[in-house]
Amino acid sequence: MATIAFIGLGNMGGPMAANLVKAGHKVVGFDLVKSSLDQAKADGATIADSAAAAVKGADVVITMLPAGKHVVSVWSDIIPSVAKGALMIDCSTIDVESARRAHALAGKASVLSVDAPVSGGTGGAKGATLTFMAGGDDKAFAAAKPVLEAMGKKIVHCGEGGAGQAAKICNNMILGISMIAVGEAFALAEKLGLSHQALFDVSSTSSGQCWALTSYCPVPGPVPASPANNGYKPGFASALMVKDLTLAQDAANAAGAATPLGKHAQEIYEAFDAAGNGGVDFSGIIQHVRGLAGKS
Ligand code: NAD
Image 1 (cartoon, rainbow, N blue to C red):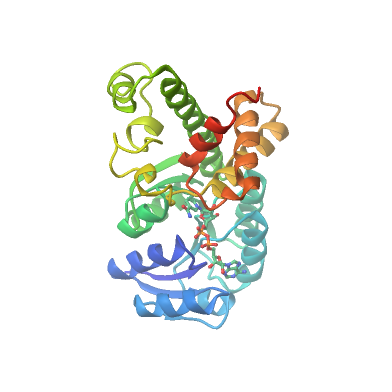
Image 2 (cartoon, rainbow, N blue to C red):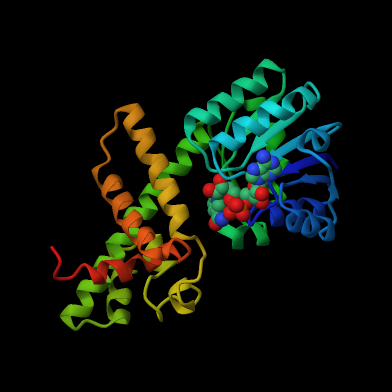
């Protein structure tokens, strides 16, 4: 079993670190927030005084931080203390450019590195059922896979450094757009006097079928576990959807890709967020869609 430093013990990182402990690894944690450190300690991790102290003697270092600037800053800070030949994995959702910078920092210090953002939210983090989208060379991926398997159920090697982040933002752009499409369809069905269940029964087994409909239905009833049945409590908060759609737009602009629906989806979630709904599950976007009726 490995010694694993885990930096960033928030909503996602906390339960992920706990699953590494459960799998038998020695986990040394660090976060800026005391309550996160206390929880990690209760979950069986050892607590370090700083990020640099946490990584000393670690075989594997994992970061789970808010954004690219945090990852580049923390990696710059800790890499001098990471052993040559050790492995660094960043599981945060960040821009592709920062991910590539982090890989370059590790490469210069002869440290293996993988970007491995996740899909599955806090439920997946707790249940160790996350999907990891990994970018890095074959040697780094082979070293990372068994560690990631203690926190997730599907690990996909997407390509070289940065490819995991690219896959994450492309996937979430599909999700953001398709949730609006499903919300619009239910809002139209309501106006036409068609029941939620009837639309669900037809579309879930025909060409309108998609994850936003069948696993995360934005109206209460047809999918009992979806946040619509629980007052749109996240799940996956709208503010995080805005973050991911903004990363997708930044990447599209930098790469010269046309993503008109991705851009429009970003604007729609931003308006929902600006109206005070950043903490509402992103499937609550159907409420915003209903509110647009008669306005255009
Ligand atoms: P969070 O804000 O709960 O946790 C981030 C943690 O990083 C915080 O505890 C914070 O104190 C810590 N941190 C920040 N700077 C630090 C530093 N310099 N040193 C040590 N710790 C530091 O966020 P989260 O929900 O756990 O999300 C983490 C990442 O996972 C984000 O990139 C997010 O986009 C991504 N993500 C989140 C979800 C979700 O449903 N929450 C789903 C998929 C991906």
